[in-house]
Length: 540
Image (cartoon, rainbow, N blue to C red; front, side, top):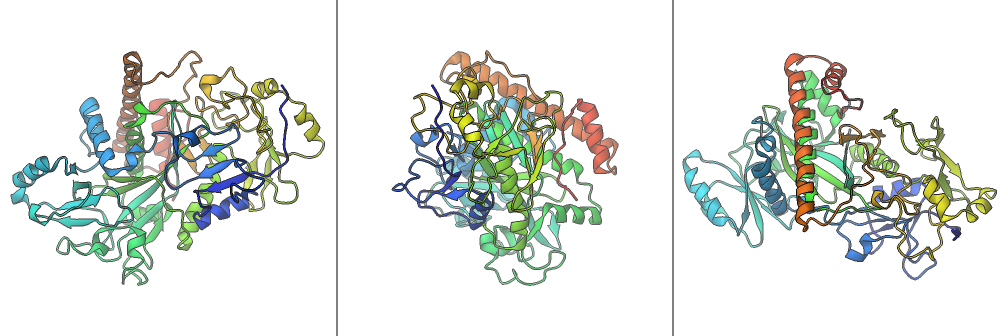
């Protein structure tokens, strides 16, 4: 059966009401995409990317071959504070000290889910009453710092809804006397096989009043949420070492570490492992899926011993453009994210059609993207960014494409054509899901997550550490089947051991060459683990 191609642009859709972050809209527009304008026009059901702040209804997780959504079914359980505690606690029981990073530090502070664990928490409070510990209370259903408060005595705890209570980290690393945390950006394009990318740039977010345990009620001293601190009296002031505002880039932070005499290479390797272990904690219950991905915001605190602590995982990290640093970090991040996922950069004139021109890639060259054909041809987009291997869908090509068959598409996944596939495509057509490799495919633009690229722009693959050979006979069955449960458990255990090996090797490199340059440490780690890949590390 021939595939019919329809003329039309690449269409992006935001939430249900068409509203979304200005920066996201700007990036989509720069890529030559057209905004979805509603259900009652010519583009009804003809969108390519649907980006939502929350989750999707079950039917939306079965998109048509040319459609992509920014959620994986059941892929965001760790974004609820109470679920995160449960997942990490379960992994600690199953896998032991790796979730303490071999005794170096815990993944996350001790926590309790209230009201279900109120009795346990009360016992802990009574046991530690003489220690005068500080606790932090976080409502599960709130975000952006709303409803969070600190307390010492059990009698000071009040809550109305489901709440998480954790040990407060009383010894944070301070810069100029100000507390800060890190916002890291993580992309998970697949859970089966598990594939994790971590962006090399991110944000250090500062409190706007100097840290002090004598003023527990002052949120501007203890919380780093931008939405809160931008309203504080100290936001616009020029603060000691921090300056005005309350954000730095990772590049600025690393330069400060260098000037202050901190050797931070091992810190960033710990953070990469922390991210992988946290995502792994929910991976066992997630089935294969196509045409979807997860984009997380990880909040990590560094204590005075340069040990990272996971604070929480955000389902929809802010993509606002509140200051110059936001644009500096988030704009290239989004462009690189869409490149990683294989979404096109279209011409912005009258011809809005683009396809990927690709062929099979030499597996030995790990750095090569699967979108390239031979040597990658670079073209400048309207934003001045280089883009990989785009070929305009001109008039001469359209007759050829109209005569193509579904069988042709399956032989060469290179022919992605936004919105150029007829809506009467056969029922059951699923795109390039690895488990349906024998079926016809047009999407995921040839992205086979069994052999994920090492890097795309600022996105660096942190898991798997090496390319695994795809097993065409492997099939995922529901975890409710006992046999499948054993298989999944074995996969998780293998992944934990792999991360443990990486962390142990990184610690060894750190001890032997504490004052070496980043490049030397990276080379030593690659040699120790026989890696032919890039080591994730923010630039200085």
